Image (tube, rainbow, N blue to C red; front, side, top):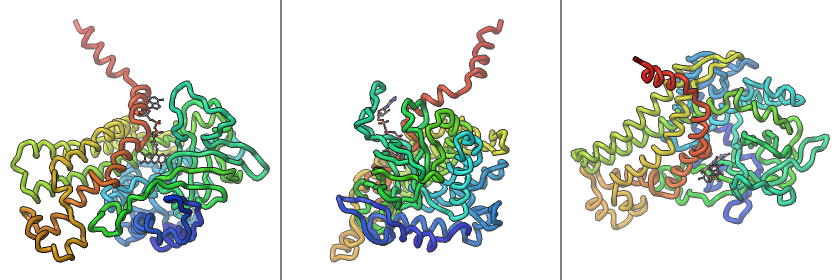
Amino acid sequence: MSACDGATYLQRIGNLDSEIWLDGQKINGNLCDHYAFKGILKSKAKLFDMQLSSDKVDFMTFKSPLTGERVGTSFMEPRSKEDLERRRLTTQEWAKTSGGMMGRSPDYMNTGLMALAAACDVFEDNDCCDQRIKMLYETAREKDLTFSHTFVNPQVNRSSAYLEKDESLISARIVNTTSDGIIMKGARLLATQGGITDELLVLPIGGKYIDEASLYAFSIPSDTKNLKFICRESFTYRPSQFDHPLASRFEEIDTIVVFDDVLVPWERVFLYKNYNIVARMYEESQFNTFLLHQTVARQTVKTEFLLGVAQLIVDTIDIGEYLHVKEKVSELIIGYETMKSLLLASELEATVNQRGTMIPDANPLYAAITSFPRFYPRFTEILQLLGASGLISIPTEQDFESPIQEDLQKYLQGATCDAKVRTQLFRLAWDISTSAFGGRQTLYERFFFGDPIRLNASLYNGYSKERAISLAKSLLEEK
Ligand SMILES: Cc1cc2nc3c(=O)[nH]c(=O)nc-3n(C[C@H](O)[C@H](O)[C@H](O)COP(=O)(O)OP(=O)(O)OC[C@H]3O[C@@H](n4cnc5c(N)ncnc54)[C@H](O)[C@@H]3O)c2cc1C
């Protein structure tokens, strides 16, 4: 067993029998053939092929400490700054294939599992949970499994005074415990790619828990009995790559997860009603810091991709002479350089913890993740402001093959290219900034790492301000 290729991955996902609902219909048959999933599954398959390609296999995989076989680098526990760099390069190599649009490429959750397993001692005083998280990680690494995940309870009432009543049972909870495992009932939000990954990882949201029945963490196969995934509307409206350059390939789908008396076997549970562990598991594993390192690496690629699209628009309609245009593209340059610098700073200032794991510096990563929800909507706005009506004068592939093609060739040509090339570019800019797929991407980046308001507050709360204060005081006190 080792890092897998695209065909092996597709065969595995094709054999899944998850209960997925879309547009009021239960999906039957091979997921890889379904219009809503085949684009993203094919794009993910390409990632698996890429990691085994002869020019990349050396850095995108490493030797398994268990078998000596090559396994994916996103599973690698970093022990040095070079390892961190290698993890970043792997993430970015994958991100480049989608311009950073695939938020849940497999390296995202592989990274989270790696962090939890590297700190598995945290789970020691919860029966055999330390062994179980280690086993889950090793199985995932050796089989190259893919995961979707869910942290969030349904958005029924977010008032601080609200406490869900036991009898209403909306948020997923442990409702029974048997010798075989725990029984889960209720719902969770919002699993991107829910049902179309090998496994679903269910994690506690962190913070304060009053209710023991909400203290759990586990991973189960997506086709576990009584587990349901309810999809939002698919944004794969047309299969044509020309018409929907992004949605046709990278539409990930988001799902509500419903547990209808799901039995989670004990060997899959790695947190059970333990307040002490839930308080420590994220902090000590540096789970968020590692996820952020992966996320910021992807967002950096995405920013560079948008910068490229913006400049192509400028060249195509020849608007580069205008000062406000230069200023707008410069905003993207500044965004890209900022994200890149923060990412590199996190590696430069990385330190080894007591377990020997090399941990990136969290502060620059938090600075990046609190900036990006502001950057990204502005970046897409810039594409709209530069593209203007060009973003909506975008005939389809079929139009270009019809009797009106001569009109299109004449009236839609660009300053530097023919009408078809120009339309292809503007359809891409539209799919980033204006289509349903693009709108969802903007929402995604706003909430990718949780609520940006609370993220800012946690940066404020956790940031050591002593040095800054003493600098200010030293100037005040200088005679
Ligand atoms: C496209 C997309 C994909 C996603 N994919 C996943 C996924 O794969 N896995 C996953 O687990 N999650 C996923 N999420 C969920 C994401 O983690 C949440 O959107 C995020 O954590 C915010 O939670 P919420 O949506 O419940 O917002 P809410 O918490 O309901 O917030 C709604 C509003 O109320 C305010 N608010 C609520 N509570 C407070 C408070 N205590 N203090 C201050 N203000 C408050 C917020 O600031 C916000 O303005 C996804 C979200 C999106 C949009």
